[in-house]
Image: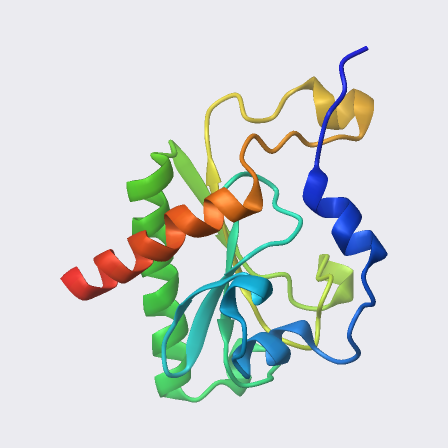
Length: 164
C-alpha cells in the first residue's frame, strides 16, 4: 500500500478554530501568508482554498461580508469580477491548465461550506485530473504543498496586476 501525505492537514486539525467568519478575518489584514491571501484590492481579495479541489484552487472574496451577489454595490461587483478574471489569467500563467471551473455556491443547499460570506471559486482543470482515487479511496491527491502554491501565485498576481 502506498501512503499519501498531506502534512498541512494535521496542523489544521490540531489548531483552535477561530470564531466568526474566516473571510472577514482575512479581509481585516494581518498575516496574509497565514490567511492564505495572495492578492488584495480595495473591494476584493484572493486567497487559496485550504482544502483545494486541485492545485491552484483560489477563491475571490468581496471584502465586505455579504451572502449574495445582489448585496454588492456596483463597484464591489465589478471588482470581484475583474479579480476573478485576473485570477484566471494568473492560474493560466502559473499552472497552464486546460480549462477552469469558476462559480459560487449560494446557500448551504447549493454546497456552500461558508454560506454567509460570498466567494467565487476558481479551480484550474486538466484533462484526466479526475481519476479513481476520489471514487474508490475517498482521497484527492494534491501534488503541490500549499506553501509552494502560495509562493508561486503571490509573485504572479503582483506581476500580472502591474502589467494590466
